Length: 501
Image (cartoon, rainbow, N blue to C red; front, side):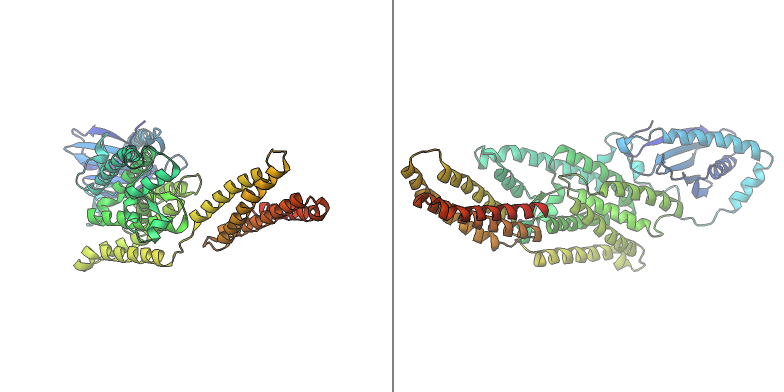
């Protein structure tokens, strides 16, 4: 089995005295017999694509003539799980060699004539050529360190991987040092959040308060090594497919634009969560690729193979399952990428030199700026954290009230003092909490929760006031029916709330 980000298998066949055009004819006929889609054929070689099946997303089969040697390669088109081809490339080459022998046997009487007819039918200009095949970028991924080595047709992608890795190392060091320097090793959820914010992670509250730079910085930040590595692997895969097609600077801008827009989607969707990672931008690149594959930007056979394999890869990974995953950023990146992909196609196919050079950048910048401006100006700043703080405060005071009213002391005066000196002032305080809850600006569901909590708090306040009067006046018959009625109301509100949630 072959492995790697782009698994492939290569064999070389010395032609010696065998006519190269004759052998290419046998290859052509063998590929046709196997039902493969041929995208390119000429004196220097051939490119074909296998059929899509449950076993295979399709492989690109290329044969190149070099110094009287035929180099035949089978390479996976789509992203491969566990970085292995499960033997598909080796199987393709074995079947191809067998089919070549079969074609040679049946064409031995008229091979010369068939070759001439095939050569005469070669168009003067073809969409594909062996110098610039559809997967030219993926051909750079040979060797363990190849994904991070810039070279022709593959420059920005490895640099992005390097930058993301360096940033992760620096932030990891910062997470060790900052608690000691700024917080005296007092580690808590609040401390961690402050460190995240210091380092440039994304947050709705901060962005809507003007810190829009977080939309960009968060694209280069990751929460763990696993988070980083998985994102970089997929970035290498999709980057190798489209960077050389768009050009390095257009590719970089598209990565940044989709990253910023996906971060804004995250801000719009999440109310309190901290977000970061390149996955939104990576889904944006997939969106661009899908858009380009919806046009004639790629040759038909290559387009079909890439479109199906890309759609399957995106479809599997875009499913919104699992916790701790920013699905909003993924959807935002994919949608914005698809739109920017059409802008990119429009730009690179223009004859006007100014539009061809600047059209993609200016259009993408305008779209990104407009979307960010819309988000910052029109997205409400919810008070979710204030809500959570008030609920936490109420729960703490509620526990204290239980002690004030139900303490273990058997002395009547001590218990009465506890109610009057500590309990009743707390009842007054939690009534203020109820009032504050009803005035918070919250998302619809949280608003309903706050209203229910406020109603319960007010009922509990009535309950404790009645409990105090009952105890003080020692009049069970006067107050107990009212206390029972309040208790029934509390249970009813709780029951209705549970049914609706």
